[in-house]
Image (cartoon, rainbow, N blue to C red; front, side, top):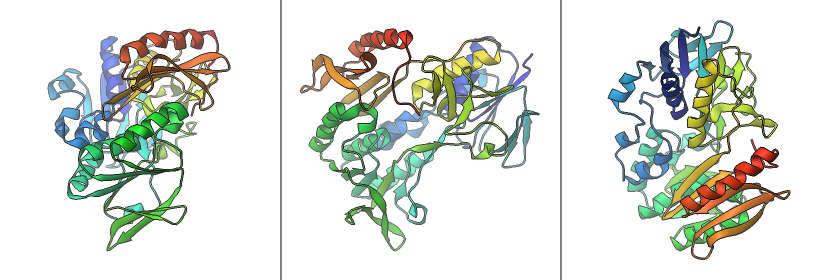
Length: 396
């Protein structure tokens, strides 16, 4: 009998786990431990609606106070976890608390990577938390020249938002086009055209080696070629690493996340969910970790079920989306770097299309650009191929 559940991480995945437990009829005690003082909030709006000012920060909250209260869970916020004893299922916090439970769910997410020397300069930002977004917005409103280091999803979204605010924006990174790693050369080439048309300068295909400063404030971004891109604000968006430092002495398997079985179980009574979880995907036949909002919710349902005795593997078809300017991209499945890509609906030139990705003769993913309904329908091709055999796709 599971009398108490402790969720470590007041994140989207952590909150979704609580909600899933209640929906499934769990009536025991639940404690949610969070390192931030904020109640659970959504992260995708941080680089878009919150950063642009279209939303007040409060609107990013995942649930109202009344809804959170209705979950009958204790929220312990602003007190990071610093250690875990799996044997006694006890978590120690920074303030000295010791919290024990029959089941523990690790939902601590990821932390942003940083450039060497960036912490010694003002005007340099990462974008992971609500406070990060608000601090960056303040600097953007006072600044004029932004350099975004990192051409992935977050970097591309941040560059787009900053352009809508009127800043002079340069996007820098080692790959050839925005989101090249996530969507491949065909679609990333279209994204490059879109950003260029909107006034973003692309300095891609060249590595960034460091920052320059004057009087304690950032003054530029130094490329591997020696050139310095002038900036009064810099956003470092070079990826993230799982937040597992607090687990280093726990004895749990750690390696690019908390290593779990196909039921998202890291040890007896210990589970992981969301960005921090690296679990055995039974269809793919390997460990996988996903950093996206949809997985946070879907995996939470699986973990809640596992806690309550359900015995089903978690083997999703991944899904993520990104909004940049008036473009909405939706991706179902996997998009391997070496995939064959063809446009199966719409028109690439019109920037309204569905692209299908094939690897080794099988469909591994579909991408819709401003065609959400059509992309969703095409998802079935991915599902059918996915069920037939493991997808030969890159994972992490």
